[in-house]
Image (cartoon, rainbow, N blue to C red; front, side):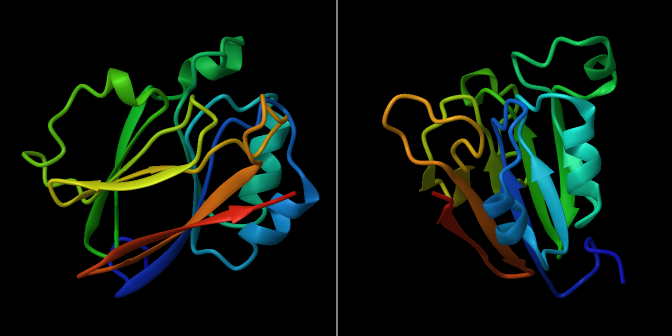
Amino acid sequence: MSPANAESVTLGVIADTHGLLRAEALEALAGVDAIVHAGDIGPPELLARLECIAPLHVVRGNVDRDAWCDSLPVSLTLEFAGQRLHMRHILAELDIDPVREGIAVVVSGHSHKPSIETRQGVLYLNPGSAGPRRFRLPITLARLELSRATANATLVELC
């Protein structure tokens, strides 16, 4: 059964790796049904390593400027377990109305600051940065549990 039609799925949500894919991140992503990467990736080999764990969906970040990144979308809407998820690296550049579009979860990155917030019934998830430490922010990713009725996110601190 595809993740879109499954009754429930667990997604690994990662962003801002900037070329660093920690062993702790790989461990935290083990067993997920799919992975979404919200941009600022690093070299394409990093994506190949994530694809070995689970199906991977990616958007381009503001520093993803190499030629290979040109094929990556700036935003992406996916469906898992009957729930619509929209990804865009920079939340401030969101160019849709999630409520009107029937989006259950908006995933972003960019700030390196992990957050989980619900607004107007939409879950806004920034998994933080799983790459190099920035300022005093934690190194994190997230796990997102989706079912036909619920969307619940949990932050995972890596180190």
